[in-house]
Length: 235
Image (cartoon, rainbow, N blue to C red; front, side, top):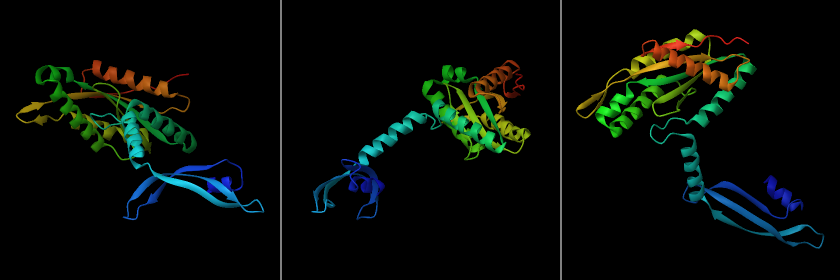
């Protein structure tokens, strides 16, 4: 309506916008609404507007699918790296405003290469999809789980009352990911090495990721199937 009023006041040469309209059958469709004043009164006021409505629902569905593919991993349905980064930046902004706490977890699967070698690539994909489902089941809806590499994952855990509150979740992830995954007659089993980094007021997104990544590799070097908390940064 604001765009239409701008055109009626002569501020734009035509009116055009995309909006949703309810179809007479009850469902909603996306419409491109486009029009232009075609006649004026003797006093110079708009008299008639001529325009069209185009159903662009299929185009909108295609755009939504492209956006989904850009932000979510096709195999696991988890967030991609770009979406994880956006959520981390949002968490950092909220933490600064509300003095809240959040943690970033980096997870690397132990023994995944052996699963691929023994059972094949397709079985490995099925294993990844199942483990992704398990990770999501361990976290809350407000948290984010992302696939950031072949068998590397990340979890953003927000709104922590205190840092220690994330530890039961980390332990639950270790236990859940270590359970066997059955595919027909075969059983596959891996574990996870997890690095945990906590938000620090002066740290950047890159700082946080580097801390979580370094802690994860420390956990792997220390024997795997365990977690390591990143030390506080010194500036």
